[in-house]
Length: 239
Image 1: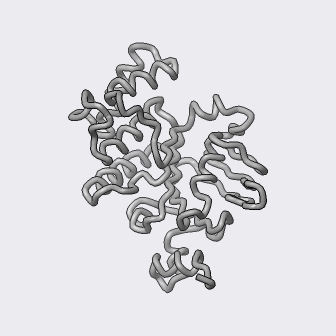
Image 2 (image 1 turned 90 degrees about the horizontal axis):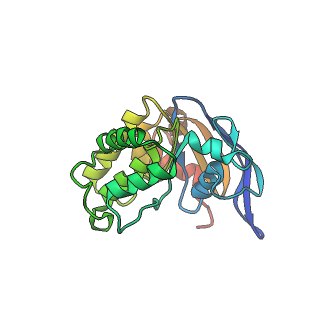
């Protein structure tokens, strides 16, 4: 459902990502790990068609996202690190706008807005300006727009960044629920997220893939400790 095939992105001599290759099968929830600046967001943007790769191919549900982005996007819900929110709108107005932009009928729009409001627990804030919401609610609004068109594939970039423990708990609960019916690639550098939600890990460092396997397999790189394993695979001896 998600395929990265030799994805690279160069900015002059700097490689933000280099030859990143992995795939995510139907029904998997895969954690996409790496230190800050490792190339996680760049890789996700290439996978979603948001930016063009210098080399390689990104596919969503079999669609090449540079050649067939519209069809691929019908299958994809994408939540970037800073989601596409309009602060002057209410959640209801924003969801209505996105539904109309996607060509939903009046009946579809009503049904899907009701569904994502329930999934993301937004009923108490639907008429408040987004600018007045807490970061946790803003994350939920961003997630709701990613789910609005009922995609089969979700790509989420740091969905719990900056949230308090209760908000993180709520997002984890939502992600576990979604993983029952969706294929999910979840970017994070918080190792607790991996243990709480993921069945598999893809780890990159300095733009290159350095691990692709099970959570238990990752632990073996650090003597059964995920923190130690992450450090062993990503730290720079010169630092």
